[in-house]
Image 1: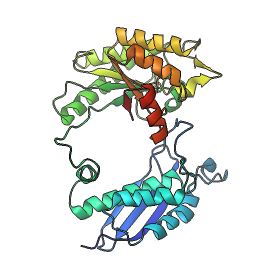
Image 2: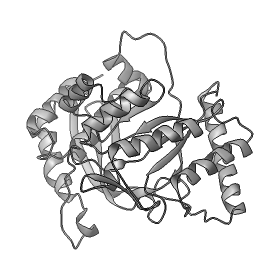
Image 3: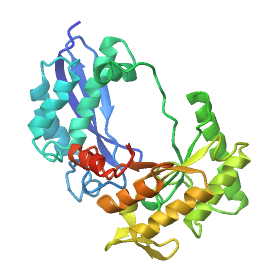
Length: 341
């Protein structure tokens, strides 16, 4: 079977928020195709790889991606045409080298990712194996056993995902005692519906944010956690045993002029004071994971949080690291986190 790349096509589509994004399709000489589209976050770190947008105010408020479709993807097609789709590392390396910038700002991270994922999908189809197996064989061929992660289900939204709700962005449930992914999904679904019933009982709104979580108007972040624990119990589960809680405050979004501005509580906090809040919550509630609990460049704060909480809480760096090797190396050297997204 000839798995050389024959052509790459792309188009502008709309994502779940109704914003434009890139969809790429890779065609192989054997006739197999792989298609992928690119996600885009509402709250993104300043160090993230850059997605290219048209900046034409007359189209989608400047968020169009026609430049990527008409310029970046054809340039990538010329580069990759004739390469074996099974050489994923070389495909990615060649695109990164063609772009030539750490931020992927020439071709656009949205162009590179769309093509990379489409190639991986085509390669998996050509190999007649699932995508996760295909990627495992490429990147972790010597690792024995298969471990599915515990899903983190975003059931309460705030921040940029839910204007009008609390400042912090995501309140997630993690069904750690589920014996399988199927059971974890069921536990999460039942808790989600219990949460809706509880909010209605409290006469709180049950509108949903960008990621499908409820966005009630409450007086404090602690009230969000209290409602979540009550919902876990209402669903018939034991908080802290069957289901635990993960947070993604996305703290960079409420970091202003060197301080953390929690408008929900009308509070202005230092790093130490915000960490103290987190410590208090982990003692009162079954919170076991905090992602982006501090601003993306608050390295000293992350180091302090690790010292105070890292032995019992998953301190996750997302905006802190943005999948950038230099930032990840710095984080390892400083012991700034114990997990990465």
